[in-house]
Length: 202
Image (cartoon, rainbow, N blue to C red; front, side, top):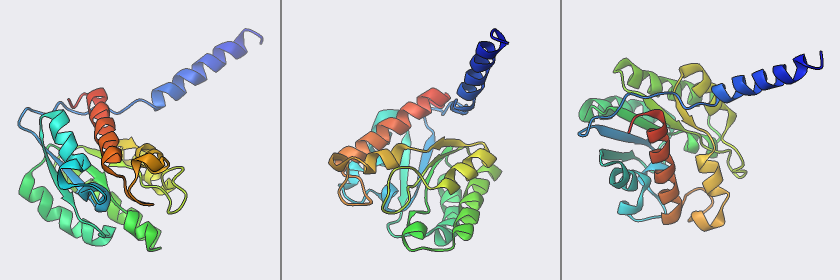
């Protein structure tokens, strides 16, 4: 039994590590379009247009990154808008960051979850892989709202759970309580770029 317990611990650690691996993505072609879809966190509130995370990610990745962020948008109109945006740009990758305004305005969370799941499904129906960013609970910014992990686990997408909460927990990286500043968006872009490289997309 003394020999078995350490072996079991090692096995459990191995299983746990495997579960934390970034899912693999297909390599993006040199002329690929990446669609950054969301609300003000994607649009870049709190910084200049060329300082938003999509603008910085475009420079880092060498791919066209479309900033399809709309400030103040809730998930229901976002879902309706995504249909046309996917059709217009035909992206090879969707970076999704949505639902924050639903949380701030205390909207129906079940409806928000359904809307985000449908956004992911819209992309999957077109064979477009998804990278989703978790949005934190209003006022806490310690971890992303649990529903995002639930969605990610059941849809097998690349999920960046802690990026936005960690940025908004650092006063030097935010312009107000819910938006990064120039440096915060730089961190967002660099982190997403690293994740895309780790996943094989770049």
